[in-house]
Length: 466
Image 1 (tube, rainbow, N blue to C red):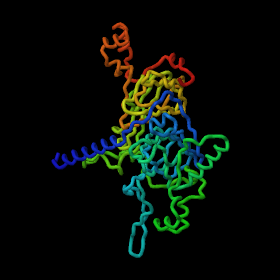
Image 2 (cartoon, rainbow, N blue to C red):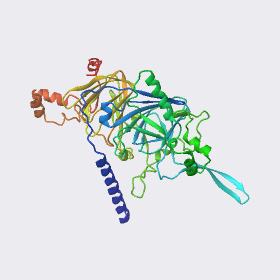
Image 3 (cartoon, rainbow, N blue to C red):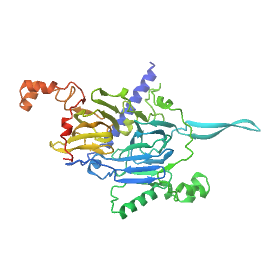
Image 4 (tube, rainbow, N blue to C red):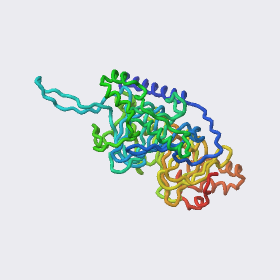
C-alpha cells in the first residue's frame, strides 16, 4: 500500500475516533432516574389527518424523562404521505407494517437523482432537466431507518395496505441544544391547526393536554413579502407556503399517487460501502436503513425458543453519529429471554405482536414492574435494571430501541452469563448451598440467551404492576 494512502487512512481513523469521542463526552448527562414503579404505557394523544393519524405517548412520564426519549406511532393510509418535517433530535423509525419510499435531505449534499428530457430548438439539441433532488430509498416491514437531527424527511405509502411505523425520538441526545421536549418543524401543511382542534376536543370532553407533542409549519411565521423575495415567486405562491387554510393535517392523501425519480427496489442496498480513499463513508452516501426482521441475520437463534437480532453502529455505521441502536425479539410460546441488564443503555420496548410477561428489578432488589405487556404497549427498562421477558400462549414479538450506538447486554443465566463465569466454590459460599447444587445452578442451562419454557412461570404472573 502506498505510504500516502496509509497516512490518509490513519488520519481518517483518528478524525472519526476523535469526533465520536467528543460527541459522547458532550452528551453525557446524569438523568434523575429515581423510579420506584414502572408502568406499561399507551398513546395519550391522537391527531387525525386526511391520510391517516399520528399517536403520541406522554413524554412527561417518569420513565420517558429518565431515558430522555419520546415515542410516536404513525398510521398512513394507501397513497398517503407524511409531509416533510425535521426534528430537534435524532429519530429511529421501525416499520411495523407496510412498505413505501422515503426521502431524507442532508444539508449540503448533491442532487444525485435527476430526470431530463431532450428539447430540440433552433440551435440544435438541448438537454433540459425536469427535476433534481436528493436520493430516495425504499422501505419495507421490519426496516430500521435512522433520521439525523435537523434533517428534513418524508414518507410515502405506495402499497394497498396501511403503513404503520413507530418512532423513538432521542431528546437527550447531544444534537439537541434545546430542552428535552420533542419538537417537530414542518415545511408544509398546517398540522398545528389540526392539533389545536384535537386539544379543544379533549378539553371539552374532560381530557388532559399535558405532555402534548408540539409542531407547526415554520413558514407560517414568515411574512408573505419575505417569502416571495427569497424564493423568487409571486405573493400568491408565497402565501401557499404558509398553508394557513390547509386542513389536511400532517399526513396527506395523493389520489393519483406520488410520481418521483427513484431506483428500483434493492438497488440502493449498495449505498454506503467503504471507498478507496480510506474514509468509511460521508453523510451524503451513508446507508440509513437496515432490515432486522430476516431470520437469516439473527444474532441469536434457538429453534425451540425464537430469535434475537440487533442493529448497531457496526451493521449501520450512521448510528455511531446519532448514538442509538435497536433490536428485534421473537419468542415462541412460553419461551424466555434470559434475565439480563443493559450495561450502557436504556431499553425502550414496544410489543408488535402477542403478549409478554415482563419483570423488572431495580438496584434495591425491588420488582418495579411485574405485568403482561400487550401489543401496542411500551415499557422503559432503565439502564442496569434487571429484566426478564417471557412469551404468552401465542408467542410474542417486539422491537427495542436503545440509547447507545452499541448497546451491550449482560445475562444472569445461560452459557455466557455472569453466574457461568463464577467458580463453583464462589457460588456455593455466596448462596449457602453445596458445591453439587452450585454446579447444577451453574451448568443447568446450555442455551446462551433464549430458553424454551414450560409456561409455569408465565401462568404465575400477576395481572397488575408490582
